[in-house]
Length: 440
Image 1 (cartoon, rainbow, N blue to C red):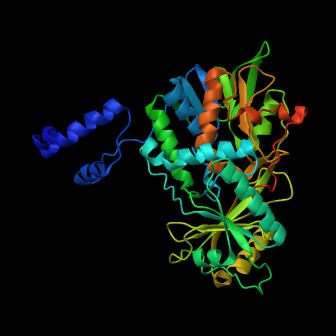
Image 2: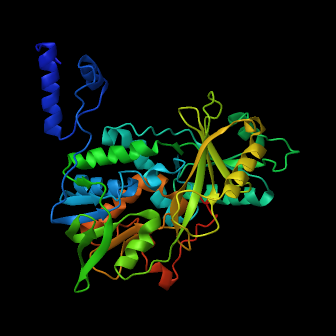
Image 3: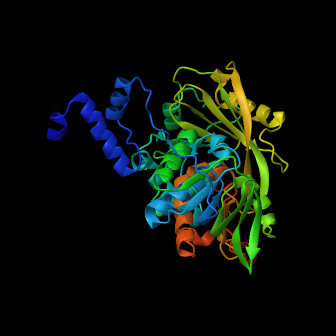
């Protein structure tokens, strides 16, 4: 502070710029906002570079969404592997990362899934500070409603399992649920009466775009090449190992290729002559017109199948289920939207007159046991991180961390070890279908 006190205003800004250059990334702070306000916000640096692809890299990551960018960041930050390229067919975060309902939680039933999602949730709580970028994580709590005696038995079982794994959880009565969400229809005469709920206080929501941008900015500052508008058209093999990828901008060699492309994972696997046990399906969501603050937590229901929260802007963010067919369309069937809105009106009659602004769909890749595939396979140097189904966003930082560790050491991270593809022929499945309250 005494050094800055001896400098003029202009010198202070230059001094701050020097510190930013030495750190490899502009430091975002209240002080930097003041500095750029002095300059009329005309000299903000580019958030990341737009490099030309090199002929070869140590690691090529296919997919510039949250998981791919997180993998690149942790490879560079934790393992010092910076000769990395992230290839994205469109723009960064333009796939499923920007097409979800942003819910973050870890209250899964099975030990293997619970440990992985809990590790990710702990990273979420410090992610904005880690990346020096506000990912707008809001730990407002997550409610999973129970509408029948069997629902409540399942909730008690899951909360007890969570507590054994060190995960926060609580079983709430109808009165406690009503106190937290006054607008919720808890009448005993309701078509789906609320008998109680599970409650995870540390769960919440985050801003999906900000997550992608934060990881991209931090990875770029560590030397990772983020290459947009570059489609992978083939995977080249040599002597049983991966040699690189064919792209719309030519061949790019690589010692290791990591595929993190969500719903299109089976397409990339086919390029290498492999088959994955996953099915891509459209998952729908929609948002309403902005409202005054009226819902300060996340409410989920498996019986009527909807989940809802309110964004900082005031929109009601509503999630529906997957369509009953496989496909790659970023849209969905109207009857699924209709069912989701009917469910919202059952739970929140006050929302029945709210107008919807827009609707969209994302492509989720679902494994038979509703758990991901993390690791390598038959082709040496070729790795997949896929099959997250409808739970991918909440796992973003944890997925990137364990996948980066797997790539760096050529063996599964302990948290990723149970999610190898070999479980589908050994029979060691991790059945999370419906076990975690809802499939999201």
